Amino acid sequence: MHFSSRDRLAVGLLLALASLGARAQGVPMTDENYLQGSSTKGVVLLSIRWDRKWKCAGFENAQLRALGFDHLPSKHANDSEAVDLLFDDAPLLMTKPQFDDYAYLVEPGEYALSKMHIKVARSTSDVGIFKSERDRLLKDGVAQGGSFTVNAGEVVYIGHFHIDCHQQPNLWRYYLEDQPSFDAYLAKQKKKTPALDTSQARFRLFKSAYFGRNFELK
Image (cartoon, rainbow, N blue to C red; front, side, top):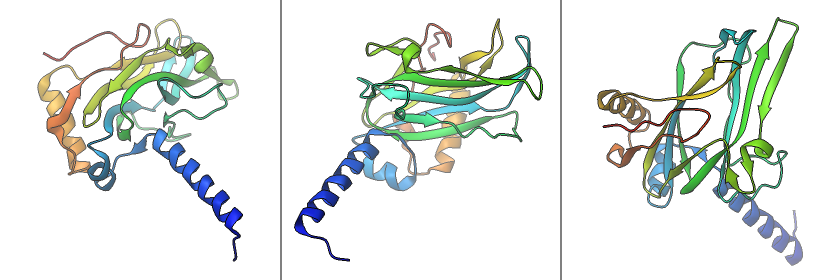
């Protein structure tokens, strides 16, 4: 296949733009990308439970389906645009009553909650989705739902996320309650990615006035 000089320039620009888009989004951490980017990027650790919570605030069950975060200041104009850090691999049918652990390599900075989907069911035929997105969670560039920060070279634990059933199905951010639990959590992450420098780990929870209580590890 032959490309003219103009075609080659266009392809080069497209590849450059694609590269910029990729750098703006968080990616699952591996030994390889961690070793390549740990000095200029940050690592975010969190855990999510995707299983259904039964008899939840008047519903037969509720299930967290998606969590998303925007790097601030957000460059996204509306809810149709993808978030910078997305977690949406909830099983459709078979779920396990456990937290799934995640480790993502991200650009340093502040991240605001910008997407939250919760599936609710009154019966097998009466199913809906509660959605909160940028129009509610991120207004005029200010985080309404909550945020977290990570610096270059840091490894930051931001919490355990699951459904809460007080009054209505909603998101809640839980946390590890003591240093031994935190150390065990870091050891499990390092077992999956041996290159991870856990000496750089920080206990810095996602902060929110709505989806979790403040807590600092002593």
